[in-house]
Length: 264
Image (cartoon, rainbow, N blue to C red; front, side):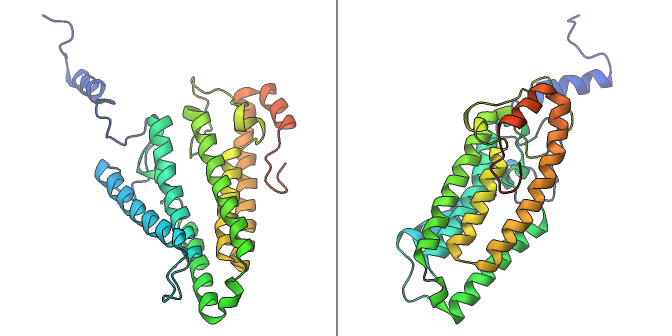
């Protein structure tokens, strides 16, 4: 009798799992954590979300590149860039995770299910922009501010994507509290300039999107909320990193700043 024939039910389950694991490259099943499942974690859901984000990105980019539609008061290049930046960010999160961190990839990697307040904040930003544009369009006419925002958003997006690609399997959207055998401390490349480049990238990307829209209220709100969020998250994460890497991480922390305002 061949030795690989399962002898009982448990053996059959183990054999099935080992046979199915990672054989279908379209599956979106992460290895070390369970998705939230508020959005179905299936290839169909991932492809549908990608299509919708791609459609929003295309429409936004077209609006931005054409300078807006003159006979539609709301169809501005500023709104176009915001839509392209927002949709491009969320698609990029999934794409980079799928390409360089496959074992952690799921539909949650789009970061569309990262809390209701995130979507409320972006909704408020759009409302602020459109109401101000309708009532007092001259307040949205400082194009140099939008230019600064565009540059900041592009740099922030590039920084975050570069950090995720360089860290590869060491990166996680969820703070890792337990060290895996594959974990290593990344200190070169963008990590030699930013201690938490993915956080700094998101901070400057988000602020940039509000400068593009010339939203004074949302710009201040985004800075305050993001500073509070990242200051707390970094403290939790760095406690874990000190446990993982000890003096090596403490020396790195002393040497490299976060380059996020008021977070050393």
